[in-house]
Image 1 (cartoon, rainbow, N blue to C red):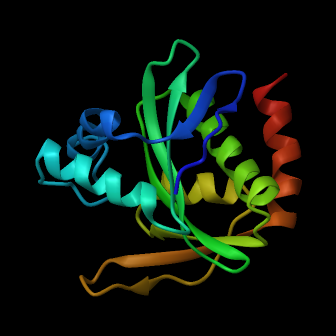
Image 2: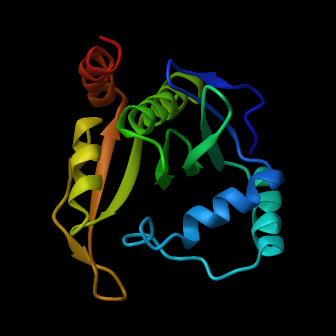
Length: 178
């Protein structure tokens, strides 16, 4: 799906990914420093453009690009598998600094809870990805015990409710915008 607007923050802007962003988005997914805990894509630029084209038409699936204030692309994130009052967050990959990446997620969660009016999101994180787990906790996530996936990796499921996010958002906003 496409969100027609731009979500503006102090450090970044968030907008729906377009086909002309394919080179950047594919570069993120082929960067070995960023793909330790996400699958590396071994596809062509045309295949990435085609995927974006299909994603933009898919109900219950938003894929965002975030840029700095000079419109330089920094990263991506999304909410997908939206069903009734919940969805799954992920597709996060960033070359931005901590403030930019944090604000991008803040804008995305504001979109999820204030625009889409969802009650909660689910996030799946590799147990070994300590950074992502810490970030999920920062946004109000609560983890279940790790479970093994089909490849033998330990995966943790986190739930972020609107209420837990709103409480975490107060602290995050104070830190970001002091």
